[in-house]
Amino acid sequence: MGVLFDRIVETYKYFNYDLQDPRAAELFYVNTPWFWLSLDICYIFFVRYCGPKFMKDRQPYKLEGIMRIYNIFQVVANAYVFYQIVGLVTNERFNWRCMPLINDGTEYSAKIYTAAKIFFWLKVSDLLDTIFFILRKKFTQASFLHVYHHAMMVFAMWIGLKYAPGGNPTFLVLLNSFIHVLMYSYYFLSSLDPKYKKSIWWKKHLTQLQIIQFILIAVHTSQILFSNSCGYPFWIAFALVTQTTFVSMMFLDFYIKSYIKKKAK
Image (cartoon, rainbow, N blue to C red; front, side):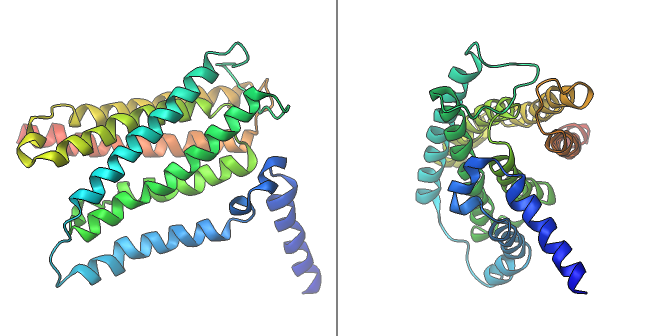
């Protein structure tokens, strides 16, 4: 029994400390997975059980003001990340086919690392979307796709920040930050007036862009699976391709049910 316990401890140390990027040791919030796993569990428990139960006999909270501030923050923050990433991917050091991890102490590697840290916290802040849905009694909007995607992104970005901050998924950050600028701009504009919400024609196209985004990320990352010439961690690339393919299929199913089948009726 003692040998088994020692083996478990050694395995945990290997995956949690030995494999991590050296810079991750400097970030207290990246040291172990337990906080973020707990946060995801609490998030899912709240939006699936505690939140709806708490709101059952209550009137929806009016959160228009705080949501507008939140949406503006998301637009500005994601636009900043997108701007930074554009500067990085247009640099001659960026390899579009397979970008390696860079930790050479240069300003370029520092900018990639900073963008990765900001992007991680933006994925954490995205969880507030669902909290607002629950407090406003918009329970149907907290769908399985919505909850799964948000919870998965937090833990996935924790993995990226801990083991491979930057590198090939910089392309993911570029696309995702751009999509979120458009998405939160839509949320902000639609919150100004219920009548105005109906006149915004690009909600449908946002879903299309999200599907295209996941497909592009999966295709771009799959290059590593067949020829990993840059040495980017294979297991992270495999997990990323698997997840983006799965999520793109769920978004496609949502799109078909929401816009094609509904229109046919």
